[in-house]
Image (cartoon, rainbow, N blue to C red; front, side, top):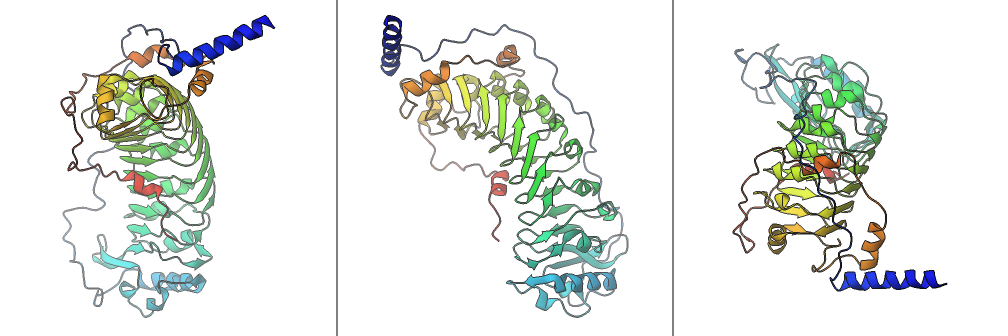
Length: 441
């Protein structure tokens, strides 16, 4: 009875001391030994830059012809036949596309875009724009596109396209943009899309693809890769850093496991990366700090833990950082709060315990949100009991010594002398967050 009474008294005392700021919520971590940084990660594949043109720029091409008088049309019979087949399968057409699909001039069809076909030097079908058409019916994407041999752009979000994507896209020599978001595709990742080697824009979000994603996805040479809001799962392939994508969204799937260390190898290209809304766990690899061209980094709403690596102070162009709704802890690094382009850093709903003067300045400027943490002296924090329960369990990370590595010369802080929020300052306009909005259907 006496030991239980003593334990209860001790628990109450600790809670009270925490509430009045007399005691720390957790012991200070032991300082990590100083070590030399490991070599910067490198890609295991290479890409040609600048990209080679899709056709010989020295060709003297026929100027684009008017749609009502395009002259000879490339693959006229083939395109007219497959269009009529698609028309028969469309059972719902609220935007009235199909009534225009009459006659022999497909350049006048709604949703069809014509231009000069370089190697034929006559007018052909260069693009499909069915975005938001909301077609109903059993619509087979692959059967349609394989009969559009000169296609360059295929945009068809918010429809009812479905079916297996078979081999054959490699024969589409000018094909460089595909948007199949918000359709009815199911099954495993459509690896045959990657056979279209000229694609620089790949948008497969808001479908029902599931299972693992192949390693070949991150060896694929594209600038934009959106696969968010599917049901992909298991771990992110370890060759993540091979991707040359400028804009990458893997958000709102079921990915688990750790963020691959190779991510640092994408430092030359990765501009915006969204990993939020998954089941990622473990501690952050310090190699993230090599992403010195990244402006948006979002790992919110996962199961990540550990401290923020000091290497984040090397992300000189970082404007938007979201680490909310995880299990991070420790001090918020001052080097992070000194970043010159910090605009909106959200670290709320974690277990951080300390902020320094630079971070407090960001809080005052409304650039840093640390609500619902365990930081004494700041408003809107977790309860003492919540924090005590979290820190009652031992917590550690693999490679703890790497959390003190700063593999760069730290950038100067442009916010150092600011004391008020600049109301007229232009907010960043990231491209990837638009991909999280489901296209209207």
